[in-house]
Length: 589
Image 1 (spheres, rainbow, N blue to C red):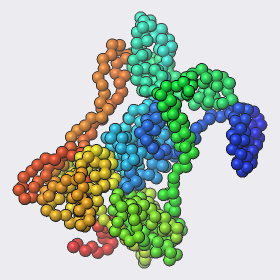
Image 2 (image 1 turned 45 degrees about the vertical axis):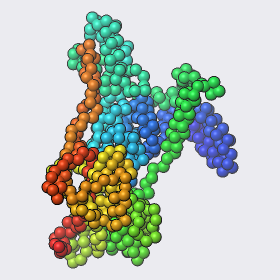
Image 3 (image 1 turned 120 degrees about the vertical axis):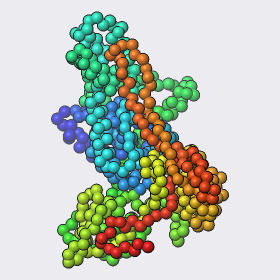
Image 4 (image 1 turned 135 degrees about the vertical axis):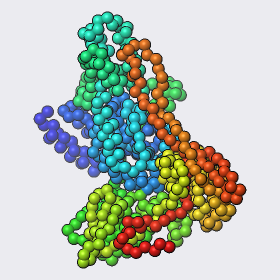
């Protein structure tokens, strides 16, 4: 009533007082008293993190089913890997979009290195891959680091979920036919409704809802010039009232609809396992609700000021981080500009073994520690790429970034941009990038769990990629154009002795082949009634992925075909300094 606010304040004070005395049971008792003393007038909202991190395939399936049958919200999934550069670049963007749509969509992340089952189930071939689910079914997907594409796809699936938040009851359909077509028998009407209800999400009630109800209503309108009456499938206000624990009617209704729980002493083994799974799910849900979104990576960000910066460092690898640490300790407050994807070390999936003082440390972990150290001494970060640099007169520079459109004015610049991967420039390579062709085994390797893959190259990078892939792939074939590796002896020896790695000496890849695969192929069904036809709204998604390569033996000049699911190119790097052309002199050698 009117004194609800006063009672809530009293409740909070009581909770604080009891919590300080560590009287947990009393705190629970006070909470229950306040819950059952009044019914909140506002809708109860279940707290959940902005972005949920999935821990198992079972949890993922449960999330899809829950929102398909209880909320109707779309589920947007980010398949990622910690060592994937583009994944790190998209992480803050995914977080930002999730915050904007927190009330209209559910956002989750799946680590492909941890949950191979989901990667294989949905055919993940490159990272990051974003998938969009509605009513438990995949309705769209794309791969790559495109903020604009992510925003467009999210808005499209949210708009569709709101448009398809409909329900056509059997009573409404009968009432509709009594007005427009009295020749329809009750059996015919029920047949039409049952066909529509057969498309209801799995795990929910057999109802004519969602896309099927919308499609049926549209066809009936085309035929009879008026549609049947549709209802909202999910009505938060009514749900909130029923969920309010002070409502006696809601509690009685819940008791009537809930199945009777088995007596654990008399329960069968299957009943005990079901009860155990239910309790584990409840505990996991409670932990998820208490999760705090990790935004540490987005701290210490650079903000434009009124005066030029003293030092701007371009590059986020060890050289850039070392420069940032020294400049920050000298009191220069440097700004480090680099995309969050990092460089070669960021994508290094194996342990860093050749750096003094480090043992059992991965590339991403080392970069994270360097970044933390630089930030501690006062360095700021701008997570973006550089498009160009202009020289000011009489002194200083303007640094232009890509996505943020920020212009950083600075007195001096330190270039530490490292190198970029080289490509083979052969038929099929460019067309199949993101569909099995990659230059980052750490990023995309987990997507080819228990499959056959190829690594091209003979240096340290190729050896490290082969060892990383051997952890998850069925087999790895290393293709090298010479009869001996250029890599360090210790890495080359590991590759040659590994049971899952075979080597093709004196060979080059001259073409990469792909094949067309179909996803979500719709099943052809026959329908007897005119209104019940064409209710299967699943679409056929066609895409092309790597199926094999053609190898040329440099000694015999004979060509051969090798079947594979992915090709990882590791043939070296070239300096990432093209953006400096016209500003400094280049050494063409």
